[in-house]
Amino acid sequence: MRISATIFLTDETITPVRLARELEERGFAGLYLPEHTHIPVSRESPYPGGGDLPREYGRTLDPFVALAQAAAVTERLALGTGITLVAQHDPIDLAKQVATLDHLSGGRFTLGVGFGWNKEEAADHGVDWSTRRDLARDRVALMRALWAPAPTAHEGGFNSVRASEAHPKPAGGAPRILLGGAAGPRLFADIAAYADGWMPIGGRGLAESIPVLRGVWEEAGRDPEDLQVVPYAVLPSTGKLAHYASLDVPEVVLQLPPSTPEELLPLLDEYTTYL
Image (tube, rainbow, N blue to C red; front, side, top):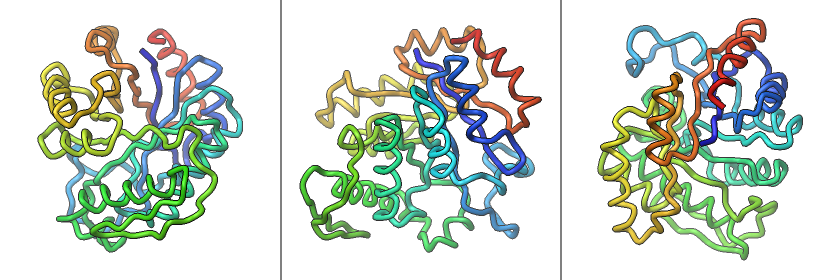
C-alpha cells in the first residue's frame, strides 16, 4: 500500500520544491494538492469541518503551478490534485494543463475531481450550483476527447469542442481520475460512469461502502480489478492503515498541516514509520 501526502500549500508554508524533495527523499509515494481560487468574505456556505474556516483556505497556491515545480525537482514522486473543482475551469484550458503536467512528469499525474462546498466561490465562476455535478461530468468528457489519440469532437449538454489537434497527450492516454465526495448512489454512479476510482475524505465506513461501490462498478460493466479507492486527508495510526490494507486499498493520502519547514519536517520523519 502506497503512502502519499496532502497539504494546503500557501504563501506562508513550506514551498512546493522543498516539500517535494523532502517527500521523495523519505520514500513517500506522492503529493496531492487541494484547490480554491478564492474565498468570498461574505460567504454563506458553512465550513464542512465545522467552526471558522481555517486561514489556509484563502491562501492556497494554484495546484498546477505548484505541482509543476514539484515535478521539476523529483523523479519518482506521484503528483495529484485533491481535488480540482472542474466545474470552475474552462475545460479546454484545463485539458491542456493536465496533459502538459502529465507529459512533463512522465505520467505521474492523478486528477482528483470534486464538486465543491462553497457556493459563493462557484457562483463567481458562473456555476449553477444545482447542475455542478453534471457540468463537471460533461467537462471531463470534453477533456477526454482532447486527450484522445485522434482528433475527436465532443458535443455535450454544457460544453462542446470541434475535432482538434491537441498536444501534448497525457503519457498514458489519460491520467488516473478519482472522484471525491461522500458515499452515495449519485457519486458511485458517476465513478462507475467516467472515473477510475474514489477518493473519500478521511476514509470512514469503507468496509461498508466499498462493496456497494464495487457492485455499482461491476453493474456498469467495469473490470473489478480496475477500481481504485484512495482514502484522502487521513490522520494516520497503525491500526487505521492496517484496516485499509485489509480492504486492498492501493494508496492512502496522509494529511499534513500547513506549516513551515521547521514545524513540518519532524512530522514527516515521524510519518516515515508508516511507509
